[in-house]
Length: 201
Image 1 (cartoon, one colour):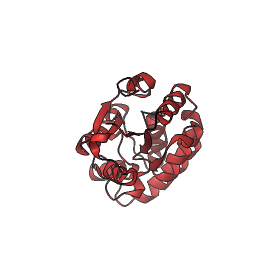
Image 2 (cartoon, rainbow, N blue to C red; image 1 turned 90 degrees about the vertical axis):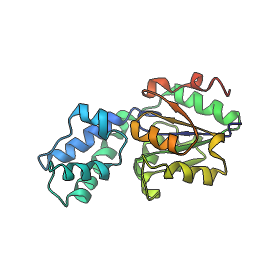
Image 3 (cartoon, one colour; image 1 turned 180 degrees about the horizontal axis):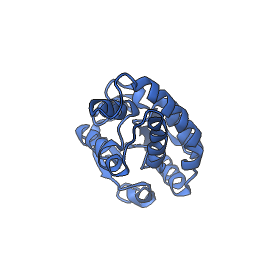
Image 4 (cartoon, helix red, strand yellow; image 1 turned 60 degrees about the horizontal axis):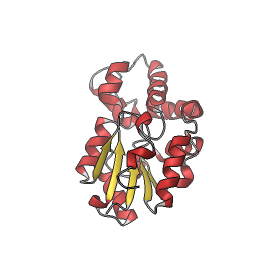
């Protein structure tokens, strides 16, 4: 029996992947670097910012030792553009209200850091519906490692088979599958609405 539903944030509840792409490239531009759109979609989307920056350093596309500097600048730009991308979507509000009404525990587990994660949920008017919110800076291993989901199961006192996880990016889907929960794979925010849960509602 399903007891909890866990959501990724970017590309699932809010249409923020392009926002992260925009903010990171704005920061990278200061150092003469850039991530192309196609590689963002195929590889970088869903990874924490620090991992993206480290990968660029490994590839020689960014000078070594800039991870914390670029990350700090990127977080500043992200906060500035969140209101542009994280607008209320009433199909998501209705969906979460119905899940809560039916007694399901609801969580959000994101590779975004806690501060921006909370800000995005508040801008989208979704924050109040969650029993649990975990950012990537609250666990040791970010997605595609399943730690964030295993941590959520423990805090919500549920077993993997009692949980549905909704994910869109390859890294998030890998983390969800590794956690042994039930995984709903979506292509983007347009797929996430009440009818997605017709089997349990």
